[in-house]
Picture (spheres, rainbow, N blue to C red):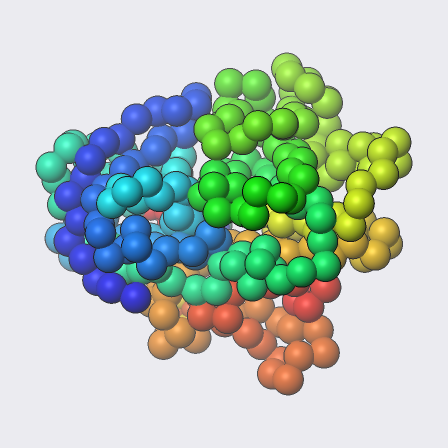
Length: 256
Ligand SMILES: Cc1cc2nc3c(=O)[nH]c(=O)nc-3n(C[C@H](O)[C@H](O)[C@H](O)COP(=O)(O)OP(=O)(O)OC[C@H]3O[C@@H](n4cnc5c(N)ncnc54)[C@H](O)[C@@H]3O)c2cc1C
Ligand code: FES
C-alpha cells in the first residue's frame, strides 16, 4: 500500500453521466490486483474531510483508472479535475478477487455487474487466465449508461427495456442459466446490495460459488476506524471489516 500524490492524466465521460478518471502512479499500477480499491482525497482543503473509495477500473502501464458517477460533493470535485492536477491516493487497498479468480475448480467465469458495479471488471478480465470461458451479464438503468470497455460477450439487462432484457440482471442470469449449461461456473459480482442479496439466493439454490465486491460507507479504508463492518455467517468473528477483509467476500459467508 502506498500514499501518493498522483497527477491526473484525463477525465472523460465514457457513458451517460459515467466518468473515467485516469491518473499516473507507477507504484500503484505495479501492485494493484483486480477487485482492490483506492481511497482518494479529492482536494487538499478540509472539506470534504474524508477520502472516497473507488474500485480500480483498469491499469495500463503506469496509468490507473477509476470509474464514477457524480453523486455528491466528492465526485463533483473529481469530475472537475484537469490533466496535471494532483490527487492524493492511498492504495491498493483490501482483498480483491485474486484468491477466488486464481484458485482452481472452475472453468467458466461469470461476471454479474449492476450499475457502477462494472467498475472492477475490465481490470479483472485483463488478468484472468486466458483458458477460462467468460460470460458477462451487465445491468443498467438505460442503454446509454452501459459501459462496454474491456468486455467481449455481454448479456445486457436494462430497467427501462431500452436494450437487451427488460428487467434486472439477476433475472436475466436466472433465465440464461435455465436455458444453457456451463462447465464449472464461478460467479464474480459487484453492484447494489439489493442485487447481491438476490444473486446470493440464486447461487445458493443452484450451488454455484459466488464472490462479490461489497460497497458500504467507509472512512479510513485501512481497518482503523471500525466503520465498515459486515456481519459474517459462521465466521470466527461476528463481523468482518469490508475495507480490510473485503471488499470481496464469498456471498454465502456474509449477511447482505
Ligand atoms: C470498496 C468500495 C468501492 C467503491 N467503488 C466505487 C466505484 O468504482 N465507483 C463509484 O462511483 N463508487 C464507488 N464506491 C462508492 C463511492 O465511494 C461513493 O459513491 C463516493 O464516496 C461518493 O462520494 P461523494 O462525495 O460524491 O458522495 P457523498 O456526498 O459521500 O454521498 C452522497 C450520497 O450517497 C450516499 N453514499 C455515499 N457512498 C455510498 C456507498 N458506498 N453506498 C451507498 N450510498 C452511498 C451518501 O450516504 C449520500 O447520501 C465504492 C465504495 C466502496 C466502499
Ligand atoms: S473504513 Fe475504517 S475500518 Fe474500514
